Length: 222
Image (cartoon, rainbow, N blue to C red; front, top):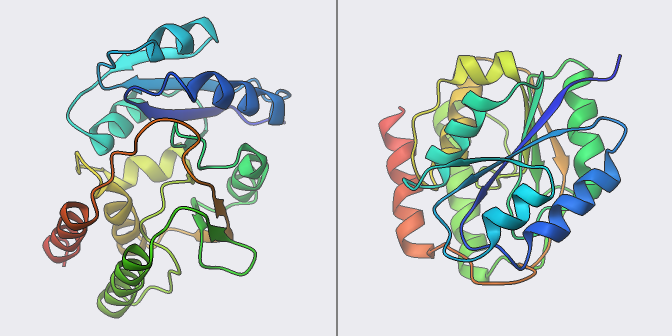
């Protein structure tokens, strides 16, 4: 039986990317007819107009990436829920692997840039060092074996997301997911994923600020 799939995409001024992303998603998994949910942070460009014209369901939230994803979860009807970034850094060709993992019985499937066959065109040396530190810290504290904890390309069973009870409003949500997945003893699979450079526009990530956020999420969940 073909699974029902919802894809949640937070956006903020992504008019140069959103049409290409939605076309690529539908091209890769057209047989599934996924529910596309765009949660927009009140873009001042044509992001919402374009996404709506391509059949996406539109909701609004301006608290941050995590808050947008949480709202997207609440609106999703799929048995499988996937998080994707709007900047085309996540390859739609990897969607089938993320879906298959949940179909095979895993609760959570996480893309990893640091597994063999994974990689990134977008991560700086400083960010890579920071990622390795946070991976080591989480694995040491929680006894996990993650290879990547700050990457947002992930799939979930709807039941698993309910157990996670996510709270983080900002960029710390990926870290919160990694920690709570381990605490809940959910069945998790990491798969290699290749992160491309942002296709168009300006990224929202700020290395120092977001590093502090990630550290605070780790410490408050101990």
